[in-house]
Amino acid sequence: MKISTRTRYGMRAVLELALAYGAGPLQIKVIAEKQNISNKYLEQLIAIIKTAGIVRSIRGPHGGYVLAKPPQDIKLSDIFKALEGPVLTVECVENKDACEHYADCITRRLWIEVNDAILNVLDNKTLHNLVEMAEKEKLNYQI
Image 1 (cartoon, one colour):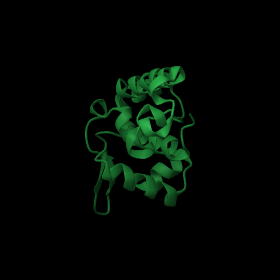
Image 2 (cartoon, rainbow, N blue to C red; image 1 turned 60 degrees about the horizontal axis):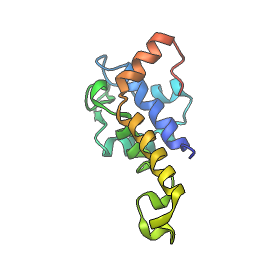
Image 3 (cartoon, rainbow, N blue to C red; image 1 turned 180 degrees about the horizontal axis):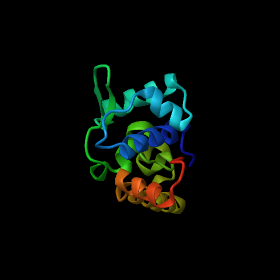
Image 4 (cartoon, one colour; image 1 turned 90 degrees about the vertical axis):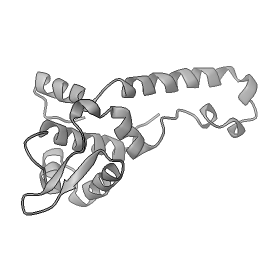
């Protein structure tokens, strides 16, 4: 399974908002510059994330975007699902019509286990966890 650029960039953008949480809104151009993402592409990502209720916009000359909830209340799985869709290693995990071997496939059980492990990590990590990691390691906040 390969995570899309959309999800990687979207996570980085939301992390920027989490790092600035409580300090006021960030404009798209600021996030784009810090994360080396084009403004146009970032606008598309933020629109998706906003529709999912993860961020909200603030209008005005000092407007921009902020998290809709505190970082500790936003699971990484929420961001992932908004940008990528459901965590799905193979189609047959959720759709029995995807494969004629659905009922007796041993490898399907493996894919379910892998799927569950990924979802478990994303469900049990929040934006606050990423902020703590970034601050601890003093990284350039790149994911």
